[in-house]
Image (cartoon, rainbow, N blue to C red; front, side):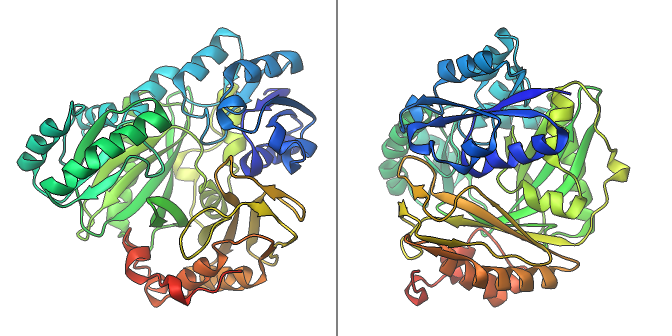
Length: 452
């Protein structure tokens, strides 16, 4: 096991990794931007290095500064968290060249799964169902129109290197496609440095369900059940739960087997997630693979009793997984909501100073956040300020605990999406488990929300 690691991330995920390292007796090194110098994760780490100005490209994406901080501190490994450099193959390669362990999959896997087009090809070859679509980058608007005519509308226009809904748009006609193509290509180039676009057939009112896997370098790949992640706004998840209330046990086992097959086919090692879209008939299709720890990993931890960060560290240090597929039992139900600094009526970010802050507590309640009263939410980073997780022996119990916990959650000084989350959790369709990706557009009523 490592004696010291550097965490190339910020906020709640940096603090989450620090907590596990403290439990294991591993020293931690934080890196931070000038905007985060007072951050809780900076204070909790054993060492901390400033790596640049507030802008993300001048700090948390500054590979040279991060590598130098690792060398100065003597860190043996780097945990990338999620987002930022977590799926950057060049960064993983640089770590290897410097003799630093990258806590994640190998660079060639990051490259293969980093392109959604290439991932589609790879999964099709592995025998995993994929959505009908185009498996080559579209050269321009005219080629996109021809491909769309062959597949049939409606379609999803997607950026091959995309994530978080950036560069993605639903199109119902050739006219809509023509309007969407150039703009989404430009956004993809701006955010990802890659403007490759492709098309997929649109699945009506699907469920977004993902399977968490852990794999070691001894050939063992274990599925850690599934998560329902269908409630989204702007194609970004806001509510996740495990297990899914929608799928049957037969479909569940098929999805778990498919996830193992998908990961094993590319020699995957460490934590990863195979994401699927599931239609009304419970037919499932590969969507993408996230080659990192996910924001929503706590719900899996709550129903399995595992510490996924601990398992990541063990695997990266050359150890075997501490469990087999047969040993991982499912216990109860867990729900996570993401707390964002945003206007719940418009979903626009709401930066500012937090004047008062109070976290909920009680049986079955877990908080993942790295802010406190006096913290400044800046416009430089993702506006998520924390995650609230509840566990119950049943889904009904987890829902009741979530409702009570949201009532206790207090954030003053900025707007948050807590009022929206309260409306979602109390909605009869959510309580029935009918949580398709259309949930927010179908049922959320902004004008009924009072901002806090």
